[in-house]
Image 1 (spheres, rainbow, N blue to C red):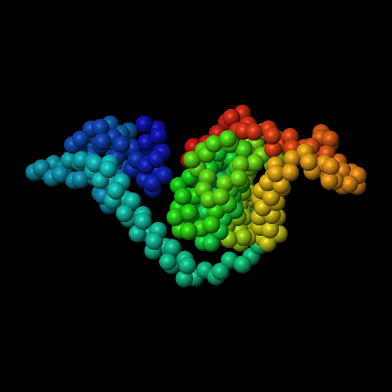
Image 2 (tube, rainbow, N blue to C red):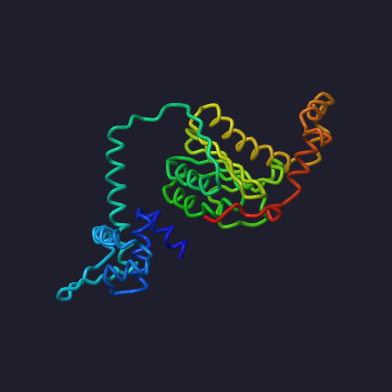
Length: 293
């Protein structure tokens, strides 16, 4: 019951309206007095609540001589009508707001928290992609956004995807040219990177506990850094896998020293570190999903 009442309030019903409609679904036809008793709404308020529900199209008034009884409109019929009204309102609002807004050219940086908000912003970014799309993702987010990636592909957006989990097989969410390479150790977290048309960027991190933190921006520096991270990661993985151990013999001592300095402290060198990552395979199973799409 609590979930149904909360959902009705999310749709714009007041608490009393939600309680009255919920009670009517179980007890009908009833008088206003009877509805007040079964719903727990004060009698002084019940007829105002019923009037509001009639205006919403949620209640039917049945006159029978001197008495008036009330019945609920079926949930499917009510929600379909509400969806139609909401869509009309949203379409009208979109046109009105577009007419007064100026193009966004500012290099904003938007900080976002929560897994559902990460997915919502990712869907908005994907919807805006017109020409090309760079993606770095784990299978969890690839599956959660599968229909959005498919939609971009259907619009002829050129998609390049880096699977950061190095999945041995297709997860069902990735699209376009897919490169399965583990090129970074994300320390028990998952990353999602989206760069549409090299004009905007979304970068999100999901922890093992399902907590998500996201940055979305049009700032040129962040767009370029993320785009080149994805491109360089694909290129480096391809070259290292192609050349293999033969590369060592072609490197000078100075280059070996530079690679040793560039690698993390836990590794012998950058080259050894990258080889370990690329050979580590699919480790995505160790991380729980961050949420439902």
